[in-house]
Structure formats: structure tokens, C-alpha cells
Amino acid sequence: MNTEAVDNDNFDLPTLLKQGCLNTRAFAATEPILSVGEYFGMLSTFLKLAPNVSSALIKFAHLDGDREACKSLDSMIALLESLGCNSFILDFHSLLDAYGKKGNWREAAAYARQVEKDFNAFHLWIKAAKRTSSVSSNPEDPSLKTLVTPNELPLGEFIKHLDDEEANRRLLVLAVDDSPVILKTLASVLGDAYKVFTLPKSTKLKDVLQKLTPELFLLDYQMPELNGFELVPIIRSFEEHKETPIIFLTSIGTIDNVSAALALGACDFIVKPFNPDILREKIKKHIVRKKMF
Image (cartoon, rainbow, N blue to C red; front, side, top):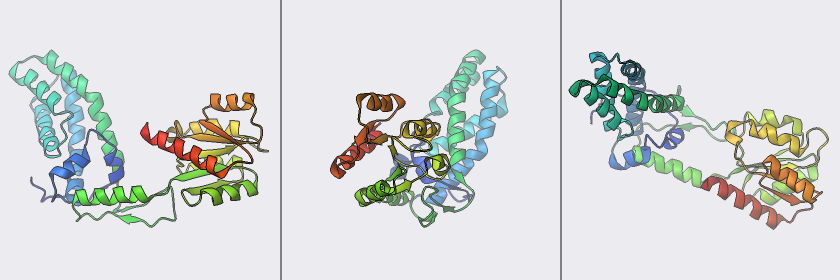
């Protein structure tokens, strides 16, 4: 594999690891000496080639393929093979065979339409993972030290480093309650296992969610400005929180209130004054379930 010409672009590796089509973990296992910088250089090459490939697919889809379009696909096939990414290779080959060997433009157009949407989505994902600097910071926790991507490290070694960091990371729980006593108690009860962000003013929740991404919410049912019920739509308006667990804290544990909370999208409730052990168990159960699904 030729990795001499490597660009200086950097990418957010945790984002790339979530892209199943790219299959970065498996690729790293097959290329033990490939460095992070070399891998990022290959992805930079992908970003340079992708617009021409998208244009080529559009041409073929409109029965207007030509030699230049074929060259674009050939270049992308070679790069995807070197990246160990086989998601689109078969369809690309089928498209080129239909066009070049069979002379069947309509069949080529069908393959082009089949792969165009998925390929463009894949392109946008890689583009979104690109970073303009070698310094990557975690916006969820400004107190964390910035992480400089060690481009010279083997890719597999750096993935292991990220996995170890993730395993040791304390998950973030956001508690909204107008009672300072309750918030202090929650921070004390949960502080050993989780990072706890406490918010006494419910009207500030939307601003907070612009900066933090909690793994679970604890919402007081009754608050003077916005109550827990009114906060749920705000939380669900964020794409990343469509499924984030919400537990209501309420001193009114009636069937009607509980049913209303569950109907709004809460996953559970706990009646105040709460038992710390029960609260911890409920949080653990719902965070684990979120990770499973």
C-alpha cells in the first residue's frame, strides 16, 4: 500500500468508528503498522475523489455515462479496496460491467441509482468527521483536557486508547429540580458513579443542551416555571435525545401522573423522598438498555 503522500487533514476517530460501512476496527486489525496519520491521509483522498464519483453516478443514472465517469469510479474502487471498505465495490463493478462489457446503459443506470444515495450519505458522514485542527476537544465537558491526535501512532493502538478512555468515562446525568436540597442530594448520591450536572432553573435547559449531551435526565414533576412535563418536548426536540432515558422525580405518585409521564416519553419515575439504592438501580437499568438499543 502506498502511503507516502499523506495530507494533514484530521478526523474525529470516534465518529468514524460509528460508521459501519467504513469498518475502521477491522481495517486496523489487518494493517497493524498503518499509522493514524496515514489512515487520515487515505480518507482525505476519499474526500477529494468523492465529488467526481457523485457526478459520475448522476451521469450514469441519466444514461449519460462516459470514459471520464468510468475513470472516477475506477479510482474510487481502488481506494475503497485499499481501505478494506467493500460496501459499494460490488455495485460499482456491476455498473461498469453493464456499461462497458454488456453495453446495457439501462442496467448501468439502475446500478447507479441504487448506489448513489448510500454513497452520498457515506461521503457526508466522512466529511462531517473531518476536523480543521489536530486538536480535538470534547464539547460535552469543557474541563477535560484537549486531545492531540497522535498521527504517528499505529491506528489499532490509538483505537485501543480511545476504547480504554470510553470504558473509564463516567456517564453524564442531568438533574433538573428547583430544590437546592434535592439537587445536592442527587449529586452526592450519584457522584461516585456518574458525572452529575444539576440545574435549578428549568428555563435554562435548552441552553444547557446546546453544550452538554447527557446520557439520562432526572426531571422534577412540579417546578414554578417549566414543569417536568413541559421539559420533555424540549429534550426530544434535540435529535441526539430522541431516545435518551428520562426519569421523573415526583412527590405525587398517583396513577394519573405516572401514566401521563410515561405517555410523554419518560421511561420511569421515582417518588420523593427517594431511596438512593432504588434510584441508582433505575438509572443503571435504563442507561444499560439505551446502550443495548
